[in-house]
Length: 260
Image 1 (tube, rainbow, N blue to C red):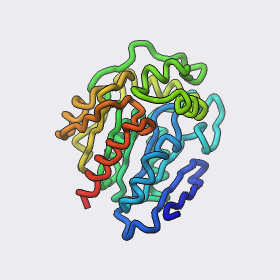
Image 2 (image 1 turned 90 degrees about the vertical axis):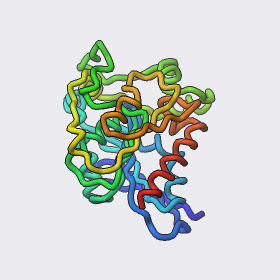
Image 3 (image 1 turned 30 degrees about the horizontal axis):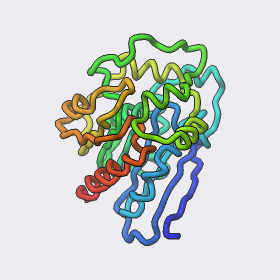
């Protein structure tokens, strides 16, 4: 097979890489940052297409998520999006470097925006993303901070998916990791503001037409960056895990390739 998978350990963080030996000259590296409760596995369906197009996708997991190191309950419960941003920058410095593309999904989109304020990127791609705090809170009631946040199967189907089989949903549920409540509270209460003017790279904002999760509308996020939103029909919040999400993957890949 032309596609080769490699797992890296970056200070205890799992980073999964895909390369296609038949793709020719590398266009660049793209670091994929997952949303809350998700890990590197969330991008497995998008990575082969990126690799075939000459990109080297790198998908990471945060601490206490699939494949990465565990930290104590006390430390985990107190984490913030800024801690996750530090982890992203650690991975960038180790495996991608300046001039990489950063793609963040949901919570990972806000984390990617935090990073992009300080790190020289080729491009920033926001998928079903949480927007900057200046767009306002997205959840009225904070989660208790004495235990990680989990979701039920019914909640996941209702909020994250538009069209997914029972079997595929079961596979997703089995791979979810309980999330730090302080991370979710900090990105939900409108307190995590972004200096959008400090982000100088091209920005692509991708939103699903059928998003029922509590994130900011893609059109409002795009407006902050002077970008035209890319709205994908017939997919939900976790578009990477739906068959219809391949439309988004192809559009993102085409946009990236037009930058080179």
